[in-house]
Length: 200
Image (cartoon, rainbow, N blue to C red; front, side, top):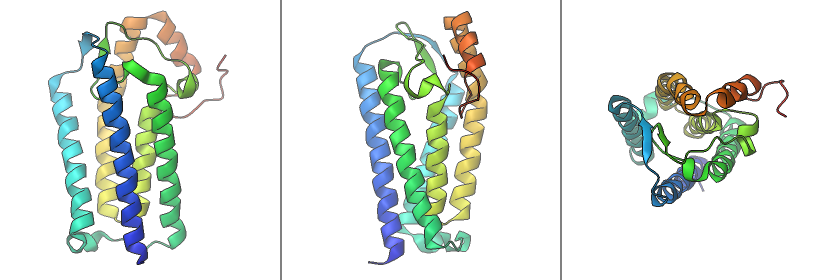
């Protein structure tokens, strides 16, 4: 089988698994019926939706009409492409871990629910935003798997903008709801990667 086809199949599989994880978690959280107390501005939700649509469009363009993106192809040794496979698996494992501990707190949009709990176990013991870490890993995987600098660059820029727009507002929401507990939690954890501070 052609190696390029192999990497495309792996990319499809990894994104399919990611989508299943998100959809199942969203349905589970929705069934809980918790009332929203605080929610982000609609304009940020619209920007996120547009970015997701852009990613889906360019992904399908790469998969179904590769000729249209050959101008952005990067020559990569097979080892880097397989590194993308490994990073993608790491991202999916982290997504599963994060969603397991988030449980009914999960939401695709930035909101606080009336029964929202402060999760400080699992990956949240060391990192405040492991979901964003998983997204970053997934985008790195996509770049290596696609070997396309246009997809890698534009997806990464879009993700960076979304994280930059959300991160401070998200933490401000958590401080507003959980007060000193979250402030203390912030001091002993890293935003995206663990720190050397004590986690006990």
